[in-house]
Amino acid sequence: MSKQYGLIGNALAGLVASAVTSNVALADSMDECLLHAVQSATVATTVGELRTLCEQRPAQTPNESPVVATENAAADAAQAKGVVEKRLALERYSHDNPFVLTPHRPNYLLPISYSTSPNQALFKQFDDGQLQHTEVEFQLSLKVLVAENLLGDNGHLSFAYTNHSFWQAYNREISAAFRETDHEPELIFTLENDTNLFGMRNSANQFIFNHQSNGRGNELSRSWNRVMLNSVWEKDNFVLSAMPWYRIPEDKKKDPNDASGDDNPDIEKYLGNFELRGIYQVEHGQTISLMVRNNLRSDNYGAFEAAYSFPIGGTKLKGYVKYFNGYGESLIDYNHRTQSFGLGFLISDWL
Image (spheres, rainbow, N blue to C red):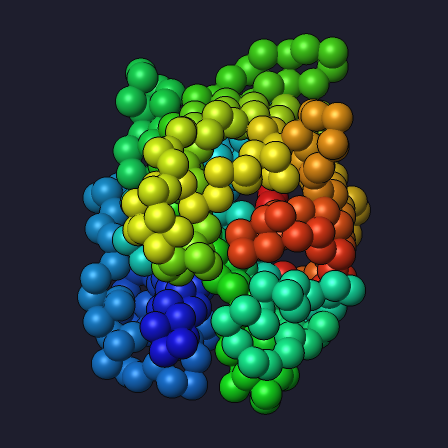
């Protein structure tokens, strides 16, 4: 459990550093830099750390101040034809700042995540305790631009990592254990596009190598590898993502305790082979997202997710409400139907 706390702490520290350096980038002198940095720093940040941060600011061109550089980046984003193109432009701008961690998927914390049917049968096989219906759910998802303009002025390669955790924080009977933590590293090659079809613009297509695992061993091990195509379409404030995938085959296990071989040979039956997601930016900073997965078989397993985020006055956080029904909310329960309702805070949204 201590390793998981360390991972969470490092990621949150990176997000704080990103906020501090966004102010640092606007400063010309050391004194001005320190003044900007203090405005974003936490109470635990020392003066020495802020001074080091200011000394290591990315150098600007002789005729371009940090303020001008930031204004130019904002101007490029403002000229974008849609919300997806705007986000891609801002991600490329952050590539030159070594302190910035770019969000990938939504980053959120749900202090209340209620499941109507926890997988008690599986848990009792390995623990004498009882799962509670209410737990804490959170997701940390970050992306780093590795290389850009690999094909002329197009073709951008990124690495992303997503941590999705379910924590029985209120369950003293099992020492407030983490019920499940899924890890999802991805290598993403993005091609921006400008094709219009049926009134929508295909703003980007992504070729993705995806690995997903819960990091456990023996009978609790869950993992799979996929090659994915994410085709992103947009019109005004609406974005549609169509993402089919192909699962890379694995050899059959010779023994259940064997570390090699397929941990979950029937996972495609429950998680399907594609995902559709629609995202709509409502006025005043509100966002609605809907997700559908299906196996397109007669048994018709799949999943549905609906989420709504809204601004909280005077803060950068947003309120977040999420509903899930189906299979694959977590890898440990990929073949167990789950219905859950979560309420909490959103740190970064899809768009």
